[in-house]
Amino acid sequence: ALHQALSPQHQSPTLTVLDNIDPVLVEEVLNEIKFADPTNNDTVVIVISKSGSTAEVAALLMVTQEALPEAHYIAVTENASQLHSYAVKRNWPTLPVPIGVGGRFSVLSNVGLLPAFLCRFDCESLLRGAREMDQICMQEEDNPALALAQYLVDAYESGRSIQVLMPYCNRLSNLSDWYVQLWAESLGKLNDEGNRVGPTPVAAIGATDQHSTLQLWQDGPLDKVIGFVKLENSEDIELGDNILNEQFDWLKGRSLRQLLDAQQQATEDALREAGQETYTLTLPCLDAHSIGQFFALWQITVAITGRMLKINPYNQPGVELSKKLTRESFG
Image (cartoon, rainbow, N blue to C red; front, side, top):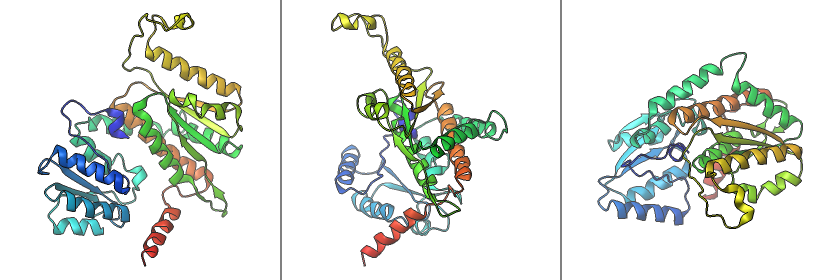
């Protein structure tokens, strides 16, 4: 998500994220790496696992070491983990995952910062933006995380159990996926009273999904909150004067950014008129400072939301059960 949002600079290393054990995907990725770097001498493999006990990471490491034996390996893990011991035996460099920081909260730790640094992103600005947002969210008044959490919890408790995040920018589509994991894994729990709670997060992208899921949001059940993310300043392209026919005469002299902004506003207005709840987050531009603020805002918001829903937003007992059952299935 961080890499896509900030878009690598010219001559930046190529970043590939192996985030699934699908053998078709893994084979394709490894073949691409071997084609680009046949000797593996210019390839760095960063192995990331907080506990070192995640089966998917262990399996991918086994496959990668077979396919890329001469690559340079770095482990990002807790100092007491199995992965740390394995790395030390092989003289790999290691970086720690801070104790108490789960994967979905780790983008501003070594987990996200090492790849960002290697891709030459402005990590100082990224962290400065996050620190500034953190300070703002410590205020009792004018606290954006508290306001957002209160709004979303109120909506959830009034029956708005489906909560959509819809950026109007393709480079933010993976941030929507990050939001889905953050919201789902943090808030889908049994609360202190033993009740199942948690809003269902959904990722969308504008304007593409105006031609798919928007129909459901417009005329379907009033059980949704649709959050829009828009950019205040970004690149633009003029449309010119070569119109398809007279019905598009209103587009002459306009730009793609003007059309995208108009569609975002019109979609939000239409959904509000239809009875759905909506809100908009505005990023001044796509730079490291703004993205750092975005990450921090949502991490603090989910922490406050967890308090309001009377659950622990930092554990994931359902995920742990799945891991246990996977091991048992292998006998």
